[in-house]
Image 1 (cartoon, one colour):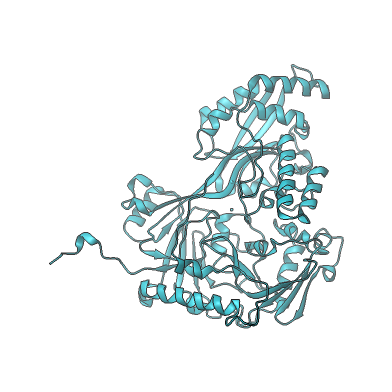
Image 2 (image 1 turned 60 degrees about the vertical axis):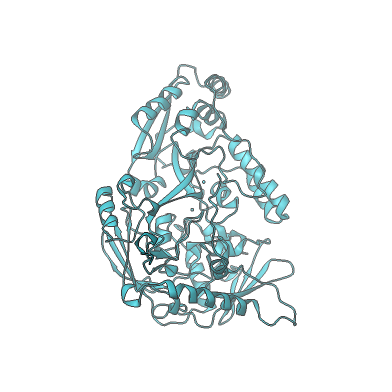
Length: 555
């Protein structure tokens, strides 16, 4: 899981829990290794937390209310943020994302080394890592897990491993598994051979898709294991074999799914639940400070789908394969009306990052310019002025009001475009989107790591994340050049790639994502506001109640 980020202010003691990764060697005069220093700081943090925690008897269950949607239990197959939050408790990768600074931190891995040419990574696993059935997690188990993902044609993030030698050929059926540049060189040593340097590899390996799975789907690598799964309830229980179990406080975590805002509000107000990510009546929350808002590293946008990604019997127009027609429609879109409904409107696809160039986005649109563009497009491709062009749009069921939909239709009608808007239930939207016979769709995308590539990969020609079907050789070439460039040049190249994408009329950015939760941070610890809306379950705990100053009588 696209504006100004809220600043997260934490104490130095809290920050020490998530000491940055260190891969270089230290001089002989240093008393502590980086790993020993990290462990020392973690111990100090745990000592401070222990004073703040309720007794173990009161940490038996933690209840989370979430929106209604069956969870995908295979972390390699989902692209839902809600699944990632849930699966975070069941699976762990070599690295995990810090909920404070969003940098990678060690998890199943304990150290790594990089070769001089930056194309070989050797990652060393911890000695005390086990699956939930007691089986040791070895380098071979990690390799097997990733190869299962690469072999699965429905794994949406597998193309992120195209940077690995032989990975793309294997996942596309043109190579063998033993040619993939991932090898177990010892029981706890994994070597990864890259096509090009990629200093962001640990960030990729933090993603849910690259957590370590077992061939048995009921065996887990994370802090919890699945105890009960019903239609609207999932219960996780503490994994007794988890390497860091001594620092996992909650014995059980229960996920309850509900769409009833009144019920969710009532149960939160009465203390029956601890955290709500589903709908609530915010005006009725008794403790307004429990309502947590934060800007996400994400963008909501409309995107066209070209004909090679539509069903074989598609009845929609192929004219939307051409950028001239797409740009005419985007120029006619009632930008000001639609954008003012969003808290943080977006003009570009990539979420602004330090060092990334300022891109000219969609600041406003113009009806006259739209008519001229459509006139030129019709003349270029021989489409008569009086011929109606159908356009099918899929949106979330509550995305636009009836008045907003009518305004969009009216704006396009002037161009001779007949717009049909189909509303899809939110819980079924993404599952149906892959096979939808639609010309233009809406999506909300949260970047998976703090890099422009987290967005641009959605439109790379051979990417498994490319739902649009759009291919552009210049765009792809810029991404390839950026992979081997220095950081400043890399950002420039990625900015050029986004400009090509916007010029092609493939996307219309709408808003920057905003996440909301209802959780009392005076009662719950280990939960931090961050731009990825990442809240690792292993860190959560219930706090000791604080005495209110107005209840203290001075004598």
